[in-house]
Length: 193
Image (cartoon, rainbow, N blue to C red; front, side, top):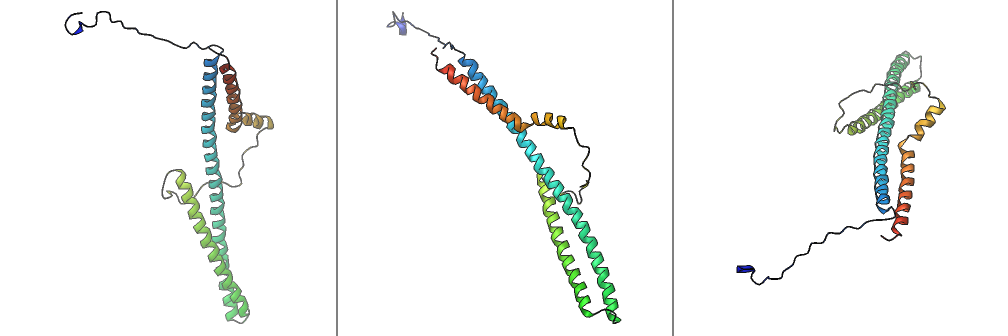
């Protein structure tokens, strides 16, 4: 060379590219394992989603039950107050002993306590439901639904078919595929390239 490169008369440059050629199905085994793990994660995600929906359904039914109990407690309080009024009227005329008035007063008091406890429980349950929708306060006052409408029963074979396709069963199947893929990878890794 000349100038600054004068000293490099016999310089050489070597570029080497290499790649390992895998034999014995190692790549296929690694890909199978990765696919099985990805499938497992997808089924896990679906199972968790279904678990959350199950929790929501359970809470909704419990809240619907509390709402119905609240209606019954309100009716019981109205009846207790009506009975209390009647007993007081009869006691003022001397037709009923004072002990019956005290019992009627106690029944009204217990009804009020029970009603207040149910109201608090209902508010807590409504708040828990609202949290499922990422709200800090419920945007509803009452729930709609029937506790006694179960729909039509499905055939046994149809239920079995649904179970076989369920996320939990698919997770078990995915676990088996992962174990088989890991076994295949371990066997392939024993062979040298």
